[in-house]
Every structure is written in C-alpha cells, then in structure tokens.
Length: 404
Ligand code: ZN
Image 1 (cartoon, rainbow, N blue to C red):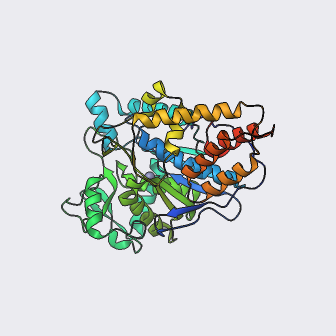
Image 2: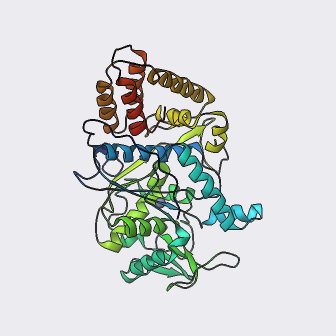
Image 3: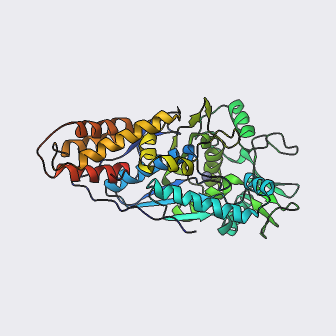
C-alpha cells in the first residue's frame, strides 16, 4: 500500500552512536540493531477507523527516533508497518455510521498518512494493509495447524498456548495479569470450548454480514495478532532487530505474536529487541478510543505548528506515561520559536559539542529530555562561529525530526 512522503534527512559530520534501548523482554537497557549493515524494524500500525490521536503520534515519533539514530550510525533501515484495515472495531464503526468499511478504512488511512507526514515521521519501506495479504496470513495459520499448534472451534481456528514454550517471555506477566489484559484488549478468555482460556483466535470463520475471504481454512478473516506475525516474517524474516509499539501492545499482542513466530519458524527470539512507548493521558485517563478522551493530531494541527506537536512529544521520555495539557503545546511553541530565532542568527557558539551531546543522549535509551536541553543551551548562548546555526538546524532536523 502507498506510504507517505519521506522527509529529506541532512547528513551530519562525524559518526553516529550505537543505540541502546530498554528492552521489554530482557527488562534491561541494551544495544539494539546490528553491529553493521541493515537494521530491521516492525512497528504495529493503526486500525484506521478514527483519526490519529496523540497516543499514536507518541508511538510513531518514538520509533522514528530509533530510525533516525540508526541512520545516523550508518545503517540502512528496513522499516515495516501494517494497517489493520479489517477488524471488529472498524466493522462496528462502519456499521454505526452507515458507511462501507472499506471507505472508512481508506479515508482514515489517508488522514493518518497526512498526520505522519506533517510530523515528519520517516515512512516505512513497506506499509502493508491486512486486506492485501490475507493469503499470506492464512498460509501462516495453515502452517501453525500443521505443526499441531492450532485447533478448530466451531469453524474458527485457535492458537493453543500449550504449544508455545516461550509464551510469557516478552511480557513477564503472571497468568492472572495476562487473563485480565486479554479480556480488556480484545481477547475472549471465557469462550466455551477453548482448551486454555489464553488460547487466541487465528482465523475467524465467515459470519453473516461480515467481510470474508476464501482460504484453505474456509471463508473467513484473520485474527489480530497473526496479521503482524505474517507481515513481519514475510517482509523482514525471523530474528529482526526491533519490534515496537505502545505499551498496551506488550500483552496480548506482542506476546502472542512472538509465540506464533517462534512456533511457525522454530526460531527464537522472534525479534531480537522489543521496545514500547508510554501512554498519553487526558484528564487523568489514558487516551483511548473506548473512553473517547482523545486529542486528535489533525485537530491539534489547526492550532499548533506540527513541529511544536512533535516537540511536545519529545519533551517527555518515550517510556513515561504522561498527560496532555494545552500548556504543553504553548511551551513547545515557545521552544520552537526560540530555536528558530537562534538558527536564524549569523553566528553562534560552536555546535559540534551540541551535536555530540544530542547523539549521546539519544543513543542512551532515547533521552529526548536531555537532548532538547542540549539544544536549549546552545540556543541560549552566544558565539562567533558562522557555521554553527546551519549545523544546529541540520542536527535538529536529522536527529530529532524538527524542521526549523
Ligand atoms: Zn501488530
């Protein structure tokens, strides 16, 4: 599927740094990405039934920083993202609004692309809609069934958690926590006939009034987790460098996807690194479609420069949970104005130390708070270097994704 337009990245002098990230599965900060050569990343995309909210933007900007730090260190980046363009919430919204689900998905995907381009997020090399690869997903379900890891339940196909020896390795959650989160996030622990309450849906047989596709499993459509596993394996292969998303994807989505990949390929880990961004709240509650407390990027863009939105996101550590307030937008706008005024000067203080600081801080688990402070310090100081303003403009652009 068509992606969105790529921002042009300035080349920076000197060498980038090896990125270290907090790994969810290892529960420690460690190097992520290859020592040399291409870095491979999969980040879960949106279900396009509503506009992009700040929580989404926070996730995609976080992994955009990963992309930028890798590129600065000389790695070509193979980045893949999916769009869940057929799923229960999308079908329910289309039904509620009396629109065709395909039109809803296409329209919302267009808005998402526009938001990502405005925030200067580097697009994935492959942006894959689930409806484009139903055959590939069905093929993977067939493979899991052949390996004895899947079973039929009234025409639907379930993954058997008993067949997954690494289940639990990504999240580290207890069974009680898993059951709670599974019920909360689209799972069906209480469906009668399942062998284990944590078994999950791989293939949903055709239901009246729902879209379906022919497959060796019979007509139907894929479950949620298997789509990302198939798209990641088919585009990146097993053992890719980083699987990313918001922290609400740790369980069940990434846990279950990793087990699917492990059982299908026999290779572990499914992804060498697993990282998650924090949740953005509004009025004391996590921003979520079910609560309806969303701040949409497209609406914010009416009032704020998209670069101020991006700076507001970067003013929090990516793993922190934080709350959006209009004051954050105002503070980010003021910072953007200060930075723009500083790079518009004829000369400034030597920028090479600032470049080194930003590189060092980002490479250390994406410490954007300290990276922004380094640019603030440069902008507040005086100096005689005529090359410095252009270099700061370039470093802020290439590493932070902020166009001044
Ligand atoms: Zn996913």
